[in-house]
Image (cartoon, rainbow, N blue to C red; front, side, top):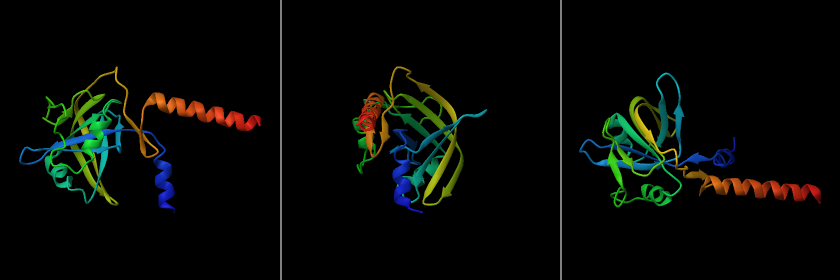
Length: 176
């Protein structure tokens, strides 16, 4: 199996850019950017996300037993970049608050915010999958998501324009 081709194919699927957070044993917020976050709707809604097994944040997420997820809005690309950077305090200069239910750090101005309690943590290949029950959430229906597709950030409008341009180019090619 050509893993690079598979990864490139999966990278063409748009995902919402998220910040996943927890609180370390010493009370310090721990956060990171993720785009492998999936909702599972059932009698009890859950969120699934994964973290590289060798991540420095792994011990904090495993020990906490809970996590927060902020779905970033299209105006929050700088926050995504900061959360993915190797800086000591990823929340420096970011407007955030502790969730009311279980105290997870949540990003103000994000499209939606969730607080989750781990129900399953399992190693899968070179990642660790976290599945958490959603214990609290809120959202701003007026905001649009920050997307990531084809190795770059995207907005819904740009994706629509790109698709329209692709269809027009295809039509021109067929007409020629």
